[in-house]
Image (cartoon, rainbow, N blue to C red):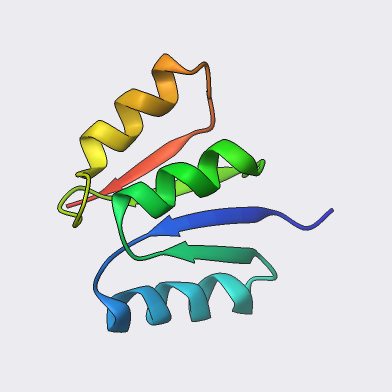
Length: 81
């Protein structure tokens, strides 16, 4: 079974590096560059984990995480600081 991770990171170089490492391990990775887009992806798709930056444009990572939890999404979240 292939795992799928959502990466929400606005720094594109860092996002590309993280995605490359995950893909080397056989982990599929979706990417969003801002909090609003990340929240929408997390609402519409099932992920095994969310890697979430704290300082994001449009909606910060803590707010994204809080909104997911309020909606009953219990996917594990790894916060990047």
